[in-house]
Image 1: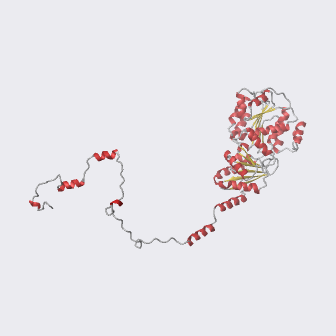
Image 2: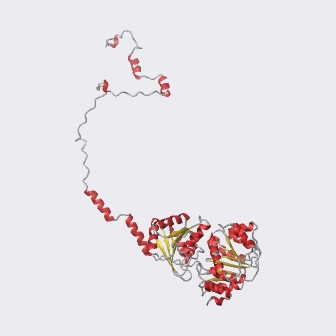
Image 3: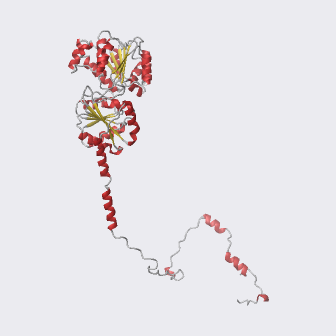
Length: 479
C-alpha cells in the first residue's frame, strides 16, 4: 500500500513525495482513513512510528475547505512540551505547503504579543501547550467555540506532567459536536477514563503492544557502579560507531556535568534541559540537527517529540524513574525503519527501577558484557592486585626490627636531683607572684582553722598555762 491508496488529495500527495515518503507506516495506514471519515479515534502507538503524520495529513485535507475567523481557531492540537509542539508545526509547514492554511504556535517562552496577533488574524490550526492556552483563554484572547477538531497527543505524557485537569477544562470549552483524536504510547486508567468521558464511539487502533519497545532497537543494560558511569560512557562512545547519539539523565545538574566532562575529553556534545530558555533550547537542538554536534545530553524534557533523523544510539546514563520514560527515551533511535542501539546504565541502587521497566515492556533486557569488563578493569586499576599487597607485606617483614628498649634493670641509675633546701639561694627558681582575685581575698579574710595552732593550744603554747609544772607530771620546765 502507498499514500495514494489512503484517499489523500493530489496536492498533499505531492508534498508527501517531495518529503521523501512513499509507503505509509502501520499507524498511518490504519488511522488516516478513520480520520477522513470524521470518526473519533484512540491510537496506541509507540514513539517513532510516524503517528504525527497520521493526524497531520488528514487534518490538512479536512481543513482545506472552510473559512477562518478571528480569535476562533478551527482545530486544536494539544502537546505536552514546547519541543513536541514545534515539531508538529514543522510537519504542518512541510506537508501543507500546497494548501492555503494558517497555523499558530501557542507555547511558553515566546512573546505573547506575536501569538495574539496571529490569533486575531484567524488560524486554521492552533498547536498549543495546555498552560499557555488556558492563560490566553482566561485573558479573553481566544475563543474555542469554533473548534471542530481536537487532537490530544502524547496523552500519557500529559498525565505524567499533571495536565489532565487542564485538558478536561479545555474539553468543556469546546463544542460537543467535534471530532476528537487521542494518541498515546500507553493506556493507563486515567487516560481511559478521559477517553470514555470526552470521545464518542471512538475507533480503537493499536499498532504495537502497549509500552512495547521498537523491534528495530537493540537494547542492552550495563551493570556499572555509579562512580564508573562516566568511564564506561566514554568507552562506549569510542568503541561503538556513534554517528548521532542522545544521552539521557534524570537530573538537570547531571546533564550539565556530563556535557562539560565530554567536552573536556574532546567529544562534540551539547546539552538541553528545562533550565534553558526556549531560544537556547531551539538553538542547541538546531546545532544537533545540522550536525555541528553529534552528541546531545538531555533531560526528559527532550525525551518525547524529538524527531532527528539518523540517531544511531541512545544512552540512558540514569535508569529512568518512570518506566514509561524508558520507551520514549529509546524511541529517539530506530525511527522510520532504521536500526538503532540503546544502552541503559544500571547501578546497584537502580535494581527496582530496571525491574519496573522490564515488567512494563514485557521482556528481560540483555546485559552488555563488554562494558562490564571495562568497569572491572577500571576497578582493578583503582585497587592494587593481591600479589602487590603480598609483596609489600614481605618487604615490611624484611626490614630490620626496631632495637629493643633496655629493661628496667639494665637502664642507668638516675642521678638524684637536689632538693629545694640543698640548692643555693641564687639557683632557686623565683616563685611566680599571682594577683589575688577578689574571691580569694574574701576567703582570706575569713578565720581559718589552723591545725598547728590547735596543737600548740592543746600542748600549751603562748596562749596556754604559764605557771609551775605540776609535780605529778615529773617533767622539767626547761624540757
